[in-house]
Image (cartoon, rainbow, N blue to C red; front, side, top):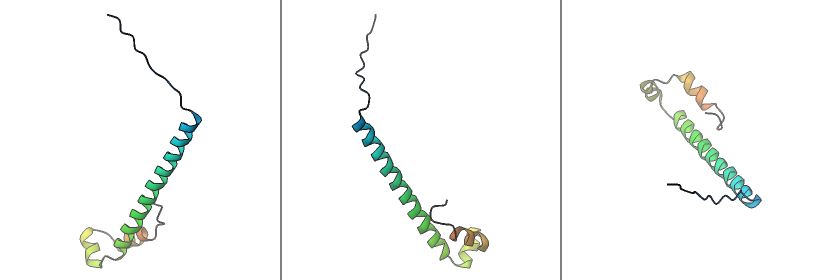
Amino acid sequence: MNQTIFINYQPYSNENTFSATFHGFFTGAAIALHTWNKHHKQRKALSQLSARLLEDAGISESHRLAEINKPFWRS
């Protein structure tokens, strides 16, 4: 039994390529902004922990300071 498969192939037009690129750029930018905001909030919370809580979590003061002083875009 022979089967014939027909594929309706239509290459991307310039408009679709631009739309995909535009969408990809803004999706990437939104993800980056979300990540940077999350880093900022986490570092702010870390800066407000007491010495007792840091000790309980096993975080040294030098590690805390190193993490707090990182720019928001760094992991």
